[in-house]
Amino acid sequence: MANHIKKILLCVDNSELSNVAAGTAITLSRALGSEVVEVHGYNARMHEGAFRIMEPVIPSKYQDEARLNKQRKGHKKLINMGLESISQTYVKPIEELLDEEGISNRSIVREGKNFKVINEVIHEESPDLVIMGSSGFNAAKEGFIGSVCLRVLRDNNRNFFIVKGPVKFRKLVVCLDGSSSAIDALRTADLLSEQFNAELHLVYVFDVELHRELFRKLKDSVATLEGFNFNSEEQEKIHDEFIDRGLENVGRMIIERAVQECGITIPDNMEGWGPAVQRRVFKKVMAGHIYKTICDYARDIEADLVFTGRTGRHFVDGIDIGSVAENVLRFSPCSVFVTMHREFKGWEI
Image (tube, rainbow, N blue to C red; front, side, top):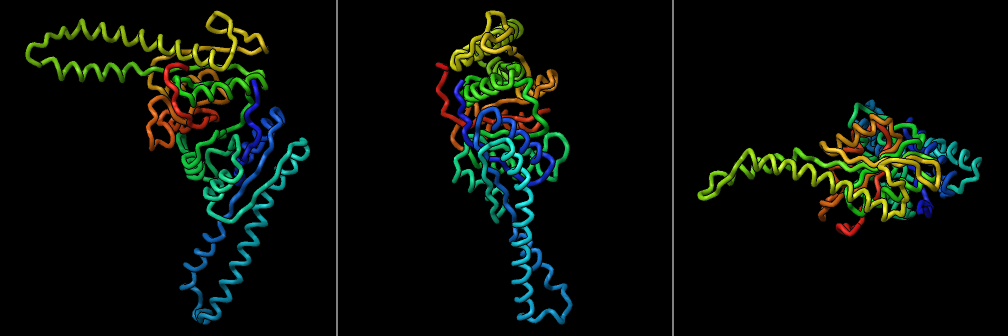
């Protein structure tokens, strides 16, 4: 499998997850030979604004405009120099670690609102992968994603590795739905599976309750139409059986086509040893609420990383990230790899 991750952009803020993200970048770069660009943004203007807010409470003898201007200039210079210096202490240890590993790297430290700085650098550098923590210093309970992470993810159609904790690359879950983004997710998961001899779990989830509820509403709306003969119990049973079996078969078909598209060779049995390297490949078709079933499965097998496409088959213009991808990111028990949106090719995949 050809390596398509040549350049990694690592977002740094000195938080716990940022440091874990740095370790992940080093692990991937060591395995793939990727270049790493570290980026950190510091917001000096925010501190300048805070100083201005405090001016009215300064003792009256310091309130004349000339003295205030002098204080403003001195404070601005001090804050800019201080914050830039602090930022350099964030990236310097990472540079040293990368240098020790012989990994090509450079750092970008820039003044500005954090997510805007990252967006600018992504635009300038065009990285193949962006690695960042799911939150900074304000991590909260399950389901919380930091504002910087969300804003950068929504604003950029790139491949993202969102770190939620240490990644050991032992068990990789790939969410498949027939979309082109999901195919890319499998390609990348296969690449990392080869590099780290990791298990691949290929997962398709179908929501039978959604289809059943739609059928019930349809049944209720047409059952009273004049001349319409509706055997509710029999028709509902046939519909449920047909939908259940049909969606399960569609899931198997999608997994098989994804495997063929990516050129992955798997034994005839549903799970087994891949012949190229000693790794296990599992195929799972499951019924349930999609994002929850994926997250529950990842939790049950103690997965290290979940791969999902940024968008699915139901993409329309205006969607920045699909609902399944966002909720998997929020509620996954482990880190999440989100592959960039690509135009849906249809069922030929």
